[in-house]
Amino acid sequence: MQTTVQLIEPMPIALKPAVKIMLNIGHAIDHMFLLIFATAVTSIAREFGFANWTDLMPYSVGAFALFGLGALPAGRLGDLWGRRPMMIIFFIGMGLAALLTALSQNAWQLAACLTLMGAFAAIYHPVGIPMLVQNVPNPGAVIGLNGLAGNLGIACAALLTGLLIESLGWRAAFAFPGIVSITCGIYFAFCCPKESHAPAKGKGSRAQVALSPAALVRVFIVMTIAAATTSLLFNFTTNGNLPFLTQGFEGLIEDPARLGLMLAAIYTVASFAQLIVGKWIDQFSMKKLQMILSWLQIPLLIMVVYTKHWSLFWALLGVMVFVFGTIPFTDAMIVRYVDDSLRSRVAGMRLTVAFGISSVAVWLLGPVVKSLGFGMLFWMMAGIATVKALVVMWLPDEPKS
Image 1 (tube, rainbow, N blue to C red):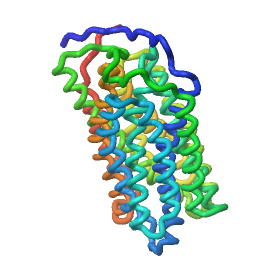
Image 2 (image 1 turned 90 degrees about the horizontal axis):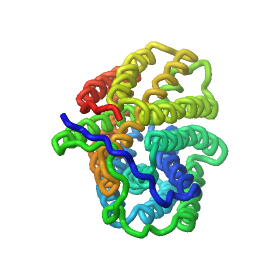
Image 3 (image 1 turned 30 degrees about the vertical axis):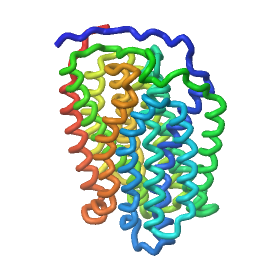
Image 4 (image 1 turned 180 degrees about the horizontal axis):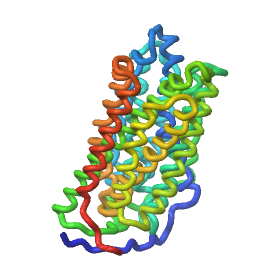
C-alpha cells in the first residue's frame, strides 16, 4: 500500500490564546454536563419516588443517543456554515438545557431535558476539536491537552455535583453550571473573531498522511469501530464508577461527598494520561502505540473485579488511565488522514455511529448491574476492549516521516 507523508503548513494567523482556552473549557463543559446526572442519580431517584437508582438510569439514554446522532448535522454545519457560530450555540444551548433540567418535576420531564442537553452536547466534538487543531504543527499534543480539559470536566462532575447536592440539592448541581456555560458563550462570542469563510470553502491544513481512497475507507471503518468501543468503555465506567465505588467501599466509607472526592481524584490523575499519549502520537507510530495501550487495558479491567476497598481504588485508577489515555487516538486519526475542509463532517459521521452505538451503554447499565452485578459488567468491558485491540491491528502501516 503506497502512502505519502505531507507536512502541515503553519497557519498565518493562529487562534488567539483566549479562544484556545475557551475551546478547552468547552470540552470540560461538554463532558461535565452529561455526567452530572450520573453523579446525582441517587438523589433524583429518591425525590421522584424510585426504589433504586438503577430504575432511573434508562431515562438518560436520550441524552447519549442525541450526543451521537446530533454529531452528523453539527459537523456538516461546522464545515459549511462556520465553526464559530456553532460553538456559540453550543455554550448557550448547554446552559439553557441545564437550567431546564433543574426545573424538572418528574422522570419524563427530566428525560426530555437531558435529551435536549445531549443535542447541544453533540456540537462540541465535530466542531470544537477541528477548530482547535486546524493548521497546528503538533495536533497530538493539542488533542492531548484538550482531552485533559475534557476529563477534568468529568472530575468536576464528580466533585462539584457531590458538594452542590449536599449543600443545595441536586437542582443546584444543574443550575449553577448552566449559568457558567451561558456566560462562557457570551464571552466566546466577543473574544473569537468572525471567520472570513467557512472551512469547506477555504484552504485549511492538509492531511498529514495521504492515502488511497480504499485505504481511507479502511481507516474510517477502523476509526469508527475503535471510537465506538472506546465510547462504550467510557460510558460504562464514567456513568457507573460512583455506584461501583460506593459498593466497593461499603462498610468503610459511605459519605457521598468523600466518595465523590475520591472519584474526582481518580479522574484528575487519569486525565494526565492524555497529555502523555498526545505527545507520543506526534512522535511514534499511531498503529503500534494504539495497539500497545489497547492490549494493556484488558487485564486491568479483569483485575478490578477481584479487588475491594483501597485495592479497588488503585485498580480503578489504572483502568481509568487507559480508558482516558486511548481517547485522543480517534481525533488524531482524523487530523492525520483528513483535510481540514472535511474534518467536521468526517468527525460527525464517525461520532454519529460510534456515540449512537455507545449510548446503549447508558441504557444497559442499570439493568445489567441490577441483574448480573458489577463483576459481570467489567468482564463485558474486557471483551469490548479485546474487540478494539483486534480492530486496531487492521490500521494501515505508515512509512517513517
